[in-house]
Image (cartoon, rainbow over all chains, first blue to last red; front, side, top):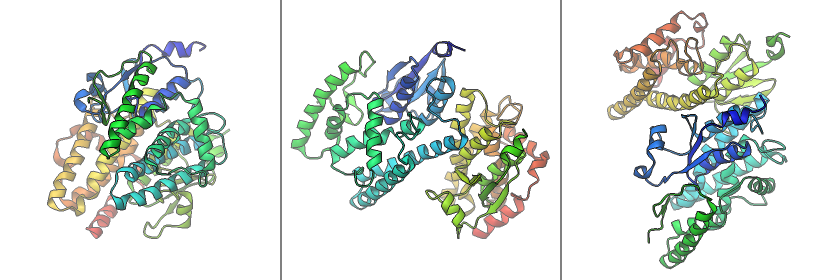
Length: 263
Length: 220
């Protein structure tokens, strides 16, 4: 049917959080397919601050993202991505070949289970844990380098499910590297992956990149004197962020995830 | 062209007889009438085939089709469904599919992680484990309301995903002296479990209850 996209676009709502890679994945997919949707920003720092709708649609985990399509909620970013691909057929993000699909799903799960947790451990873990975690992250990235196998995107010539699922690596990891000084992704070990990051970031629209490092710095720099400056920078950024959000509903409270801006 | 002839060559299932994950893939292959070779793995001494097919996790099951490996039981089932399109297992409606994909791994974890240690657990741990299994069974009981199977009138993805529990939990009940199914708390699940007794495809050597009971007792 020629007007399939319009016919399906009756009511699409995304409950998300701007700082969440999981939430961003769903936005990317909807934007890629040109699906109009209403975005509701959730304050995920506290269960009590979450909207009643979110708690109703995701009572088990109470997490974002939740996609609501014509009143029906779909949970878990990977599942939402596949749902979007099956419902809106333009710019498919999954290939047709069953083996390619199985591989994309496998590697997406690999990124979540094996790559992301050690990044947090490398940052926030105990001294003993940190070294080992770094190694783990590097191994994961080397694996992904070989999975990419010289292609432009994991999906081949165009962005696919795995490229979207790997958004944490394309964007967040670089921010974390900048803020923490830890070198996860090196040109030495993962030259192709680094080039892929540039390509992926260029295509996907991200919220102001400049803000992320400041907010992260304010969140965990332990030294008192440095912290004040970091918070100041972060506040400036939030003002930019606010205007860049372009009429999206932003939370009224002065809390941004782990950073308390109430001072 | 006959679908079987086109796709049916060279399908290997690498696994171990006691694994619920392997069991459900085997069941799907049987349901779809796909001929395959079963390669039994000794998990204490993993074969080079397994290690080369699943270098990341080194786990079973692995389906090898035309020399290409596919891993993770739920992904394997989706692969089989997409390759051999007769008798679809996953729902065709995207929303129903999303729901099936959501519940399968979640309940899996609750059931498997909850029950796996029950034969060997100390009393405190045991209570916690039983609680976890009960929570999962309650969700499943709720999902069966008004339905013959999780898939509706016919067996679907969730029926296949959780069918292993009818035998696995049965064996654990016997070994550990606990009550899951036989507690009387889940009449719909009890009914559903009994539906499989008649299935001819169920009478396979892959998963005999007595063998499983002996297996658990050995490691107790």
